[in-house]
Length: 258
Image (cartoon, rainbow, N blue to C red; front, side, top):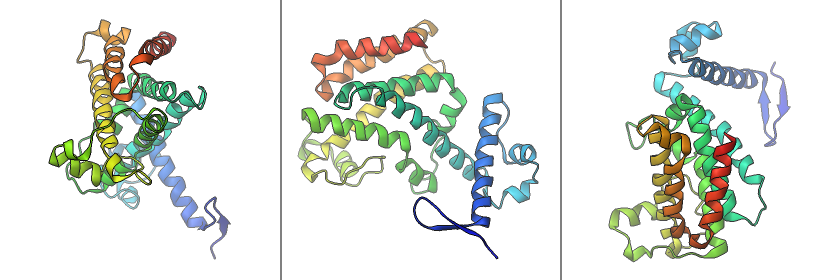
C-alpha cells in the first residue's frame, strides 16, 4: 500500500515517487562532488560512490548523456538562485543594476566553478531536437536574464530591431524561439527584442568562457577588464549609454570583493 502526501502543486506523491526523487537528488549531489574533487564523472563512478551497481543506476539515467543533462540542469538551477539573490539586493526599479548584478555574479560563479560551468554551459548539443535542447529552452539562468532584459526594455523602451529588418534566419528564430525566454504578451512586432537577448548572451558567454578556460591573458582575467569592456560596449544597445559609468563601477566593486 502506498502512502501519499500533498505536494506544493497539490498533487499526491507516493512513497516510491519520493524515493525516486531522493535518488535523483543523490545522483546530482554525488556528481557535483566528483566534479569539485576533479574526479572523472561517469556512470560507473557515480554508481560506486552511491554504493550501487552501474546496471541499477541505469534505472534512473539510461546513458552518460542523460546523466550529463540531469546534472547540468540542476547545476544551472542552483546557480541561478545565486544570480537572482544578487539582483534582489538592489531596488526593484533599478532594472539595469539588477541585470548587471546577475551577469557579474554569473561570471564570478563560473570562474569559481569551472568544471560545473563547463558541464552546464559548454557541453555540446549533438542533435537539435534532443532532450538536452528542451532542457536548454527551460534553462533557469536563461529565463532570469531574459526576464530582466525584458523588464528593462518595458521600462525604458530602448530601440529594438524591426522584424522586416532582420535576416530571414533571425526572423524565424525570434518568431519561433528555442532560447529560454518568456514571450507571452510580447507583440509580434516587438520580437526583435529576442535578437537583443541573443546578442547579449553571445557577448556574456563569449567573454566568460574565454576567461574560465584560460584563453586570455591571466592579468586581464584577474582584473575583469575584458568583461567590463564587453558590458560597456553592449550597454548602448540596451539604452544604457548614460548609465554606463555607474554600472561599470558596480561591476568593479563586485570583482574587488572576489
